[in-house]
Amino acid sequence: MRRFDRLLVIRLTLLVVLAIAVVVLALVIDVPGIDELRRQYGGTGVLGALAFSVVYALLSLLPLSATVFTIAAGAVFGLARGVPIVVAGAGLGALLAFYLGRLLGRDVVQRFTGARVETLDALLLRRGFWAVLTARLIPIVPFTALNYLSGLTALRLSAYLPATVVGILPATVAYVAVGAYGTQPGSWPFLSAVGALLALTAGGVIANRVRQRRAARSPLPGVSARSASHPSSAGGH
Image (cartoon, rainbow, N blue to C red):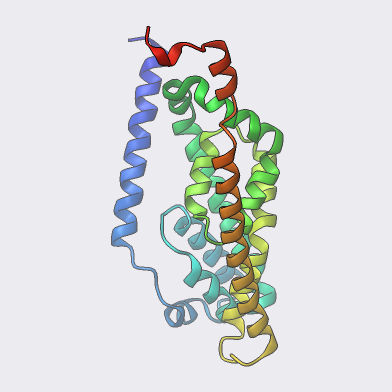
């Protein structure tokens, strides 16, 4: 077996092991509640904030909802401190998942998909920042899945990480505000945060439907060219 093939098999094996480990951990780990997180991190100062960010980053590697942690950051640290703590943790987690996908899965994807991934890669090289930014702005897009999938493509880190940080800010501020002002449900910061989340979710649903309609009307890139160059391919050999 050639050296490249051996490395490919090793990476594919590690990728499968990683996927299994992620699923198993997601099933056995219980995300603590807001009250428990407040007891653990309340009054812990800078070290507590750093620990919270690290735990948040590790949690974001798993297909678990980090919403409780995001809201808890507001309840424990307040709005002004909670937002940078969450953004730091989410950014670190996004970076780790991106590199795991890139190191373990990129060569596998290229080997088994061939030219079929080239169109996506070309698009992401040209519009990677805006593609990631749009996906991050929609709260219904799975954060963890997008992290790993981005690493499987040719997306540049210089586009991926800034777009991630900027894109998660609106929802992060809203969720942290919900936690910070949760004891004052009638206050304008709480109501504004809930309204922002509803607006982001509604905007995401609308944008997704528009994208699906456009995709249904437009053929995939390269399909027309292949059809023109092989007009009789559908009629047999």
